[in-house]
Image (tube, rainbow, N blue to C red; front, side, top):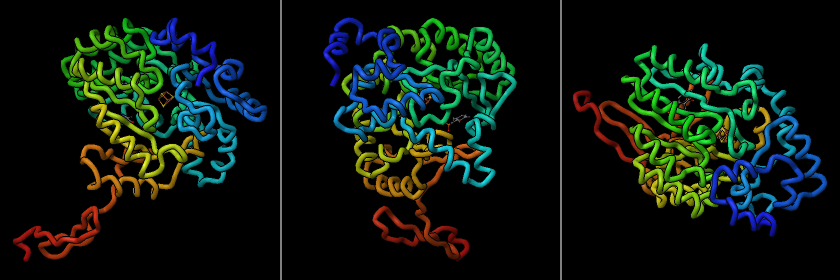
Amino acid sequence: MLTTNATDNRNNGWDDWRWQLANSVTNIEALKQYINVSPEEEEAFRQVSERYSFRVTPYYLSLINKEDRNDPVRLQALPNIQELEDIFHIEQLPSFHRSAVDSENPLWKEGKTDVSCIVHRYPDRVLFHVTNFCATYCRHCSRKVHAGQDSIVTDRALIDKGVAYIAERPEIRDVLLSGGDPLTVADTKLEYVLSRLRQLQHVQIIRIGTRTPVTMPQRITPEFCQMVKKYHPVWVNTHFNHPNEITPEAKIAIERLLDAGLPVGNQSVLLKGINDTVEVMKELVHKLLIARVRPYYLYHADLVRGAEHFRTSIDVGMDIIENLRGHTTGFAVPQYVICTPLGKTPINPNYVVGTGPGYIVLRNYEWRTWRDPDRLDLI
Ligand SMILES: *Cc1c(COP(=O)(O)O)cnc(C)c1O
Ligand code: SF4
């Protein structure tokens, strides 16, 4: 799938994540060495990458089937002219929604603190932005206006402020390292954050949210795993959206994390034309279970400027969950959630179809109903 030139590189550095970062494609000229780009696409890429960050690792590019314009990895990684056209649709929205998408993701507004790297939306847990850099900028990212911007670079002084914020608040028992992608920074910097957090008695668990197992699995080195396991309990959440992303390389990365004692969960985003069918989603969750990754959340795509073309209707997500629950292994089924300014909210098909004095009427996954006794004292 790669040009001869790029294939040769497999032998001198391909397996090294620093090589993957250094050789990431960030402009149209480099991209043309990997895939065929029509003149119209070239023009679109130029326009879009002026507004939104563009970067993709050679590894993630290599997963693209060049013959397929609608390849799921291509759609997630390469700029699309629709990112600019979205604006027109958003302007037609009611004013509440317009303000929510105007410049920032509503989530960010909600949990904002005085310390720019800390988002504190729920009392007992915080997001800690270690960097705003990603190995690959996903076109559907809900933080796409922030991604890659210099204005929120997290230096040592800001990290210290973030740690101090947590240290002052004993109610924080769960710290989620986020970004950008926290695993794009060096092990030494990560170890600094992890060791500082571990000095705080009230921090029970640390979570790392990273897409590197998907876009740059070479990042999960034995050295990284040796380092991180000193700071347990540490959990990882990653972001596989399509079965094509579960490659032998990704499986090695996951296996290393699991062998180091880090449980691995997956947060997918429901994306139009990528994973918005029962078939694709079922294959994804089954492949995740084979890799011992627990599907955690299925996010309804956020209302984000530049990513509107990925958004499906909520019916699509409900139908997927309806066709998973009961039809496959219980823990293959992620929790479908929608992010609103009020926080993450679960959306579930309804299995309670009626109630009466002392009973509840349930239906199962086959739509058979059952009257189950409830408050017997009421009968
Ligand atoms: C998603 C999120 C969390 C973590 O939520 P969990 O349901 O515990 O995984 C924490 N803070 C913010 C702001 C979030 O968006
Ligand atoms: S890795 Fe995560 S934060 Fe980075 S661009 Fe993708 S979705 Fe956004």
